[in-house]
Length: 241
Image 1 (cartoon, helix red, strand yellow):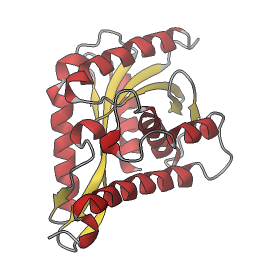
Image 2 (image 1 turned 90 degrees about the vertical axis):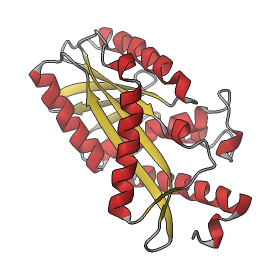
Image 3 (image 1 turned 180 degrees about the vertical axis):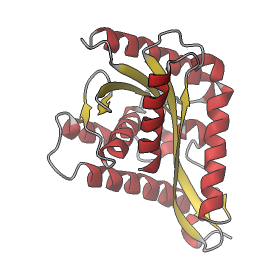
Image 4 (image 1 turned 135 degrees about the horizontal axis):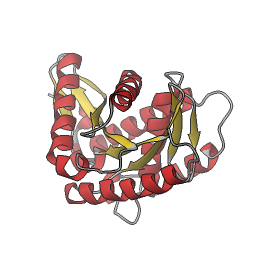
């Protein structure tokens, strides 16, 4: 039984407002020090767009798309990984002495995931060609939050461990369902793909409305051992944040 705050239209809006407020708090905590170039303008743009996610459309989703970019950057930053917010790529970080370029996409529906992956691939090739460093690597980052929950669902689990496992299974399944669109990427400098999900959740054992978040990183087939190790370190950092 859900608590009264989640009942009806007001409850639905409340649970999504809570989710987005907590995401903003995480971003604020990560960037609490000196603000990098581009942060202020991104935060300003992230506050635009529809308040209610149900009212979001492909023409008005830029605000939440930017929130995904900031989410990725903040999760890396809290793990001590230096990041820069760029026009292109969306996020640039450095891990084990290697520049990693990330292009972030947030598909509006399941049928557009493959197109978004291909667009990110094209953008990363352009970014890597202009990097001036042959060791630079790229990662495609896909938010499946809008695909998984358009703004009207509450994901429930018996307890925190169960909920985390179930969310992980959902992200794994979504990623694998479009494996043909990413596992055959021929550009060897693009080493992996990240799928991320954030959604309102309900812990049934203590009747708590909270936020669930999971990240899964897949390696792309045919990558050399050094790149697989680099991707493993990246996955560990962003998943433990």
